[in-house]
Image (cartoon, rainbow, N blue to C red):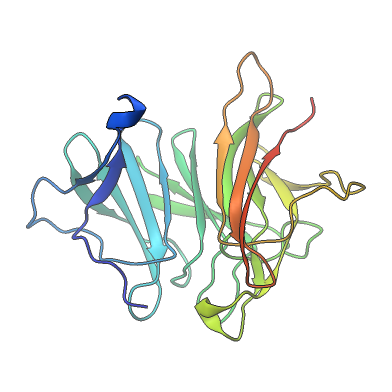
Length: 250
């Protein structure tokens, strides 16, 4: 579980150049003596869409973290922010929408976490939490290594969480536990969850998984945003290489 330690540096890939000239470059803090987050795995990253990248939680060599850091791209500097509520955890999911940061789920080393959406206010450097019933009816069941994505549905700001690990494997990080294949939408205005029955009658649908890549695709012309899911780890402990697009009807 020893994490790669790159002293607060990030890797950047420039898409503005021609495909033959695109390369990875290491973006290091401007002041190497200033504080920076320690190396970790199973952490969560998101951005405010302009100049700030947020880093939360994860697993160092021992234990789990609840810290929150912000990296200013223009000044290449890290700032440690107020830690998230609750126990330290890995495999959490975070998303940024409307000048707020949202955190859900994760694994604290003993149990999968659920039942709250935690909301960070950058202006006041404070957290609040909204609770729900994590029973698969009033809200999604506890999970980790899923996703949390900010989208707009019918003009309403929303969050989407999908899939993830519900029960950890006895092999720890070397195995796959019980995975979920459900999809939920959180209405940011009403603070309520709705379960999405995506093509339940179809045999062509993503298998349950965790540790996958996901992102929101911003729609144009007033349509709903969509979600793309890439790869991951299935319940059989095999790596997946498929790509899926989740579109929401009007």
